[in-house]
Length: 473
Image (cartoon, rainbow, N blue to C red; front, side, top):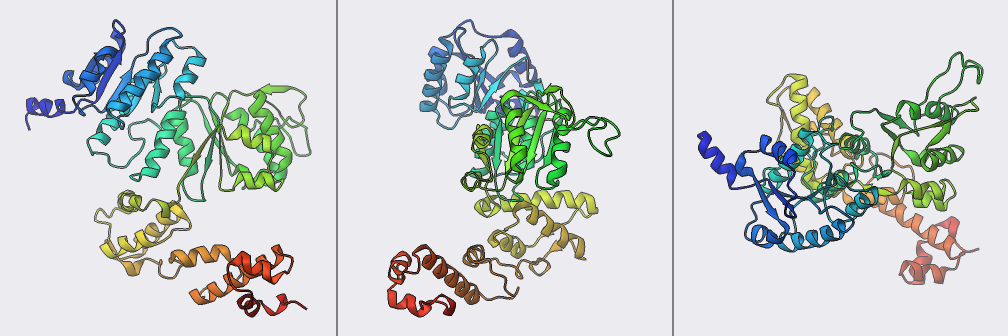
């Protein structure tokens, strides 16, 4: 294809439509955009001409809004966004917030927009990467890498609507200073999302410090977090800074915060409220300029109800909750994830032809992956290392020896009584039924008739199923 025809091809899909009031064009921003995109890749319109510009074509990859200056600008912007959505509900919208007050930026963050941009805070590459990614998605050229083009962002694959929603939340919240709580099962990639938030934030050139609250003994966790003064305890031969101090001006990631001991939770609450902390053995209170991102695989509301987690800390942490789906909830991501893992292994193992057979791929799609992406990656790597050929066959995977039936997996969670590894589905069902009957009888104080109503079965049937040690005397 010639250069001229390539430009013509690009011109059929304009990545950016810049919208603003008359006289609002920023020459510096325009020069930056023009310098990266070809001249026919940017369209500009004033607010009053929006219907005739956006309404006649779906060729735009994204909209960049330039609000009016002054207190009425946000109100006008809200109406403008509503109009854009009526013309093109799916188009990504970015808003330039230069010159706005903190309260005006906060008001913008509550609107239906994907990104708040500041020309002063974001590098040219960041702006361009996001606009290009949006354009590619609209063109159907999205390769599944959610944060491609962002320096320092981890590679996260997500074709599924659930992961695209996660990515939208990350892009929306990252430029702010808001505390984020990432929720999800083990192995879903909570730390990767935390790193993405940091990489897309204004603190991206500052430290990202992670600490696993479940991996460190309670007696050592406070020292790891806040550090200590020389002589503060036996063996403290020199002053040591903690993770909080190491993360100053950057991001502190508190992984598995649901496992944090109660005494330490009050100190994290103080850090969130006042941005202050004390080293062990010090009488000097220190300030901390850190953004907190936390994660857990526990249900924190249940932990609060059980008295194991502070309610006030829960609300401080969950300013912006982001819920990561389990791998079984996003089967669309299995194939692109597999390709990504194989591509990496092909380079590491120097086997460029490494691939999955069709049968192996279909089996991986059907499997429930209780260990999520971590288990998924480990299974492919184990098979790739052990096989002699370049194709991973179904027989090379160890999925058949695991619980891969949805009903059986659910029953194992319901009835976690120890049993043989080769247990049949009937045996698991029998144990689950016995456990449910015991629970119903306990809940109804041994009243068989009430328990039968609770279980929606006849009382006589329930009596015949009651375990011997649970029968009425």
